[in-house]
Image (cartoon, rainbow, N blue to C red; front, side):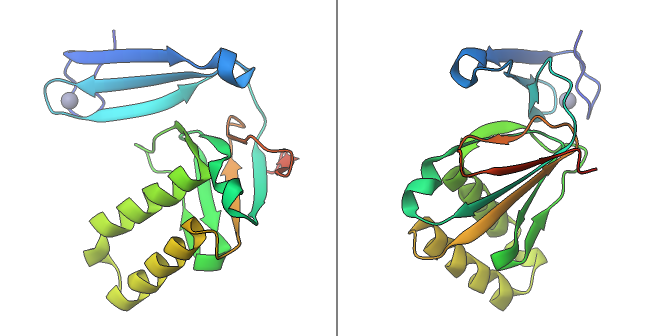
Length: 164
Ligand SMILES: [Zn+2]
């Protein structure tokens, strides 16, 4: 029985989708939605017990933005060109997206939390992200994942195992 981690309700919808065939490894995405408080959370489940991994990818051209990414809930995201580092919190989500999808999530996060930051600084970062999405600004995407689940589906991605 799944319980809501926020309010403890058992009135929860639990939905799991199997992506194993698409990614040639065991990957399930489990989403729970609490009917009592509205809490929603997704995470990636896998049977493989991975060692920690650091993935470094250099986004050089617009086409790179379409590359698929699996990002687990234990994974941090870094983009040094904009001084960005997102470390996973307790309700951090796991998801499958593209590199552009990650940029979009960062944009949305900045829009929603604009008031928490220095306005001028956020505006500059937003402008840079726009350039990145247009393919005019090359950047590094670094994923650090203690669970080893995360992956960037490109031969260009450099993976370092057991990074700790
Ligand atoms: Zn709840």
